[in-house]
Amino acid sequence: MRYKITISYDGTHYSGWQVQANSTAIQPLVQSALQTALRHPINLSGSGRTDAGVHALGQTAHFDTDQEIGRLLLSLNALLPVDIRVLKIEPVAADFHARYSATGKIYHYHLHLDPVMDPFVRLYRHHVFGPFDLEALQEGAALLIGTHDFAAFANQRGTPCTDTVRTLRRIDPILQKGGLRLEFEGEGFLYKMVRNITGTLLDVAAHKLKPRALVDILESKDRRNAGGSAPPQALFLVQVLY
Amino acid sequence: MRYKITISYDGTHYSGWQVQANSTAIQPLVQSALQTALRHPINLSGSGRTDAGVHALGQTAHFDTDQEIGRLLLSLNALLPVDIRVLKIEPVAADFHARYSATGKIYHYHLHLDPVMDPFVRLYRHHVFGPFDLEALQEGAALLIGTHDFAAFANQRGTPCTDTVRTLRRIDPILQKGGLRLEFEGEGFLYKMVRNITGTLLDVAAHKLKPRALVDILESKDRRNAGGSAPPQALFLVQVLY
Figure (tube, one colour):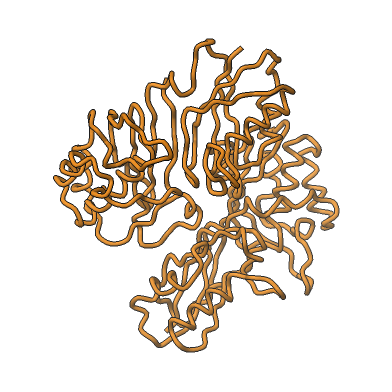
């Protein structure tokens, strides 16, 4: 039987979802808890990576087992550190694939705009100082919606990504206590794409860049033309859509 | 000029408000930041202590200075660690006293009742497992409202407290994501009183104690008859009333 598993984690103390040399990643911890609970080797295949320090409210993955999974959710949460929680385990079709069956992803990026940081969310916000032009940010964000070659907003990872065309469905700024969050929804995202877009939009909001400049940056397909990468601690993978 | 200062802090990494031997407390950090910013000795007098690990959304204190306080709030927040934030500084009458002028205090105690903890609030909740009878808890809480000798719910501190009569105005359970919070409002609270009442009410909710037993515990005036102290990390000093 194939199962889909939904996981929430506080990424503060982890090197990301995927295993890397000399670091503590989330995927191997969950996979090893599954192996302990089910007593056989497991291959836990995620919807995609999250970077070091990035959080998840609903990361998904799939695995196969013929064991009964009656109390598996409780067992996994007893085995895992408290900053990684399994929210749901559900049977899926044999051809379900956490990565290839996904039709989209939702990320939230949390900006704190108030001059005084809230101590209770300090680990989960990017504190932005100085003038912040929300209208300019929205104007810039609108130019990125749709299907584009996002090479200018993608970092390179080991093996270069050859297909950098992605469809971005929305970037919505939603006001919340202390600031706002940028809600990103797209069919898929390139490596560091959300953080690179956010960093560039922050340059627009700070009037370091005109909204129209985003068109030129997109067309250049050159990462060096976009803004810096916004820091990881304010980024949440909220939902993987199927 | 006398000023009232309102402070929020995440108590996770502190030994409490007040200085203790070999430990990092909050009051001396804020007092020392004030001295650095104002360049003269300051006596920062708080509304009362909070214990090690307890948080504050609105702790208050007062201090005197003849300096201009124009950018003092920003200076203090630049000098203080990010888990301590100054929210407000306001001029008050010369006879204002953070402790003696207070007419009441509001504390919230956050209970997580869902079997799966939320990783993002794990540092600020008490995870309660097993059956939870909210009606019994409410019945027990109602018996504590009013003016009583709360000696049975007070821990001893260095010098014993001779007057243990206090007025409790309300204990309201308010449902929130993952569980509920107990909102306490009273004229004043004895040492560990909120946590001792909470621990005892949790025994009532778990059917280890009948609601009516709270009357006998109160009348006994003996700390050994009440329940254990609920852990500190779920307790917030929300507001000091004047």
